Image 1 (tube, rainbow, N blue to C red):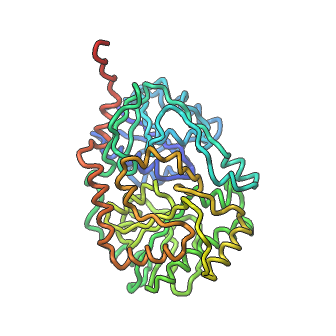
Image 2: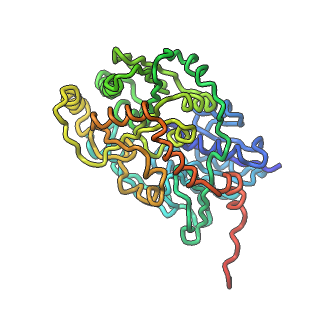
Length: 425
């Protein structure tokens, strides 16, 4: 039987890979899916039940891709996502994944296939040469041949109502009814060591932001970078302390969360297999993130977990609060210009994501709070924890948005067929 190859090249972001795994689960025979992924993600894919091989870094990646897509047993190649060829040094180009089975590109951020330039906000405010090297002020996304169609997952993209010229685009329901509904929340909390009387808050800081602001180029930690990370965590610990409820803060990270905040239990889970991560999302009383495009955020919403998203779309006053005033001073010393505008931390992308936001009721109704408005964050998080039903409309908007859409497997099957001839052609 023919196989489907998923190429998910990111070494920093897991969301594109998770979307690819969800597509693979909806193939007529999921066992015929296999993955070519960054080395750090091979075990993650295998734990999700799929065959995986390591995609080499550097110049060897191009050869590995050309060999992989030339396999005669393939009936489709899925690139997840095409924008990563501009954002990361993946070592291969779009030409290296053409020429074999039909190529389909995932376009989860609705950038389109025509190629475009994206500005990276963090590099515009930093003179750190490592930031400039790994996060240049501008990156160019590759132009895809028009015969390469696009898959747009809902969530997070809006449902497509038209193709892009002659390029076919299909939206699909990323999750269907596959998310679990019978999770033993008490068992999940006990496994993490959450004290029974505490509310569980899950913190998901952008891995891109952590890399850019604390260890660009994955360099060895040093005192300055550690200070930036400690400052960010001190903000969240103080935020949750002021909610005046017993809270356990859980972070999914390879780096241990600093044990700050006398009234907040701090827990680091380490990276989790997808099934366990999903259970944690369902067990949380609040999901707090600085990435509005996060697939994990949407997954949490579908599982019924209230969510608060931190963005910074306009300047905010420091206010009279002594903690925030001192925090801003310290952060300015460690990372001057830290308060650059963003929808996605640390890229910015206030203009670049407008197509993604258009007609996207889910993203429109999410609780969005300024990343440096401390009082507003306290109020939003407290409301989410004490009145979780008030967030039900977000899940309802998401459900309406994906209603009637095909599965990923169905959309992929359509797109890998030859395009129908136009009338009169």
